[in-house]
Image (tube, rainbow, N blue to C red; front, side, top):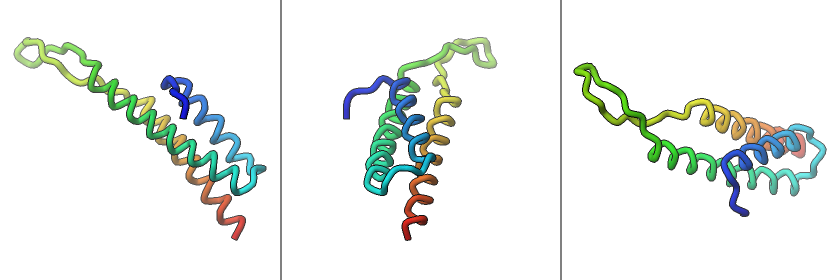
Length: 99
């Protein structure tokens, strides 16, 4: 798989979900796109985890001392999970319609 920047991977995932939701692809092409979507999801998850480890924010604790706290990237994680769920649901519907 080509190296994607996080934003490019998310855009590609959105494109894959749109194509799968249209329902006009054959089984082989749908499975190929689903597999690509899974790999992109894993890539994005890895990039988010790496970012969380790298990004830290200085916050004052209750005693007024500065302490390092991990930065949370909740919105991107949620969007990524929703895209993965949508791709999985679409693939399952496609399989059911072929049975």
